[in-house]
Length: 425
Image (cartoon, rainbow, N blue to C red):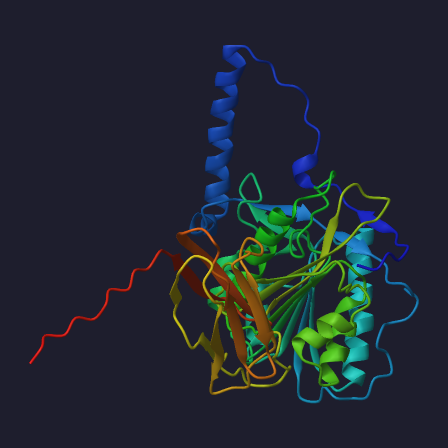
C-alpha cells in the first residue's frame, strides 16, 4: 500500500497481560486445577448461553491509522446518491464506556452517520452500551450495509477461529450468530473498521504476520457474512473508511472499483485470490510496511463478488469452461510442431478478461499464445528429439473467478508404419 505517514493507536490485548510466575510444586498445581474448575462452573452458571459455542470469546484488540488528511472526511460533498439505502452502524466497547478509544470511535461514527444522511442514506446507530444483538438484528433486516468498529474477536486460546464482534462488556457476537441471524438486503456489504484479524493482521502481531495467516484470518472473518447473503466484505484500519467507501459505492462503482478507489490500495502490493472457504467469491489482501511496526501489516482486505454494485440484486456468476477437458498428442522424436486451439467459454454472460500460463513454469516443448479478444488459447507443442512421455497443466485464470485447468500430455515415440498388404484377385 502507499506509504503515508501515519500514527498508530494500539491497545494492549487481553491475552497479552503479564502474569506473575506460578509456583511449580505439585500442591499448588492441584489447588490451581480446583480453583479453575470452580471458576469455570461459576461462569457457566452465570452465562447459560455460553454452552452454545465451543470456545470462550477473547477480544483480540483494535488498530487505527489516520488517513493522509485526517481533518476532513473523505468523500465529503458527494452527490446524494444513497436515497433509500439503509445502513446499520455499530461501535463496540473498546476500553470502557468512557475510555478514550471508545469515545473516539463513537465520535467518528456520529460524524460519518451525519455525512451519510446528507447523501441520502438512512442510518441507524448502535453504540455501547446500547448495542444489543437482538436490536441490531431487527434494525439490519433489509439493510444494505452493516458497519462495525471495535475489537476483533477470537474464540478459544488462539486465532484458530476468528470472527464476530464485541458489543459491550457482557455481550459478544459469535460468527454463527452472524450467519444465522442477519437477513440483510440482497447483495449487502459488511464494513469492518479497526478490528484485529478482519483485514489480516492483529495488534498482537508484534513481529508482523505471514501471508498465509493473514489470508486464513480474512477467509474466516468474512465467511459468515458471505454465508448470510452479503455480496461484499471490506476491512480497513483507517479512520473514516466506512463513509469514504459508501460514498464510492453510492457513486455507482462496483465493489472492486470502490476497493481500488480508496487511497490505501496499491496495485503493486495487493494479492488477488479465490476465496478458500466460499466458492465463487474472491479474497484480496493488501499490506503496508510502516517503519514504526516490525514486519508487514495486512490492513486492507476485500472478499465477495467484485462485479456487484450496492443496491443491485446479485446475479449468478457466469459458468466458465474450456472447449477441451484435456489435450493429448502423439509424435515422433523431433517431429513437426503441432498447434491446437482451445476455446475459453462463458455460458450466459460476457467472458471476463483472462490470462494463461503453464503451471510450475515454462516447458521447452509447450508454449501458449493467449488471445483473450478472440476467446481462444493456442497451445503449441514442439516434440523434443528424445522419446518419452511429457505432461503439464495449463492454468487459465479469468479475472475474479476460479482458475480453469487443462491437462496436456505429449507422447514422443518411434513410430513404425507397416506397408499395406493386399490379397491378389
